Length: 260
Image 1 (cartoon, rainbow, N blue to C red):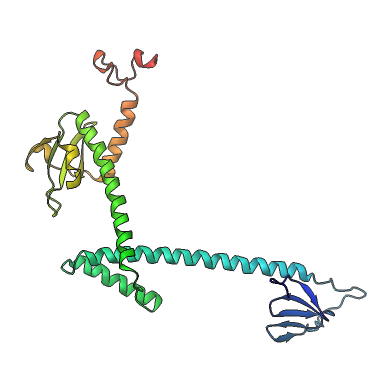
Image 2 (cartoon, rainbow, N blue to C red; image 1 turned 90 degrees about the vertical axis):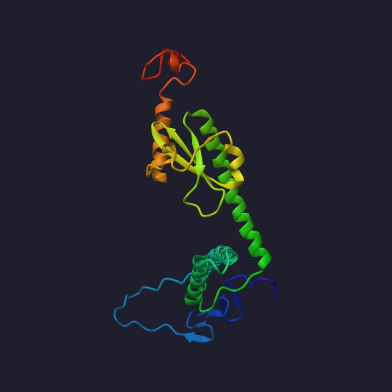
């Protein structure tokens, strides 16, 4: 017997189409999983002197193989997505548990995860290795902190390039050490939170009290802030730049810029 059967193949007086399915050589009986199927006569019409078209069992077997392969691939994809979702839930649950039982919001999220998993699967989220959970959570935090660090570098650069930049304590964050940088870009107020670990990047920014008029939030949203920055960037791109900005009052690009 070979390591792998090839279908269809002849075996005595039957043709084997696949695992547990075969047909007799005269086509009178098809056996599927131990059950015999016999073609039923159709008396509704007759075609004189015309033979029925032969059944191409090889084509049928190939189609069946493609269908089984597609089902297997779909199952594999679903299992991968399930495992990824479990990893995300493990990281989220571990982070909420680590926040402490005194945090009501964290405790509620943990309970919500457990209840949702039990309703969806019939069982609670299976436990996984605590070290693996901690590693995934730490990696996610490191990636987040790295992105905030990069943003803080750019905010510090903008503060150094623009007039009137100020920094004050963040009144909307309970954790101590958080600050907010306020800038005016293109005539619009912009602000960014600065984490305590990034405070060394903004030491050059003028510090003011929370009631200083320059540090009073004007109500701008994040979307409005970046829409304003995009508009200001487009406006700057049409000007000549700092090299000759003080030499003329043109709104459009000057002769120097046009000839570059």
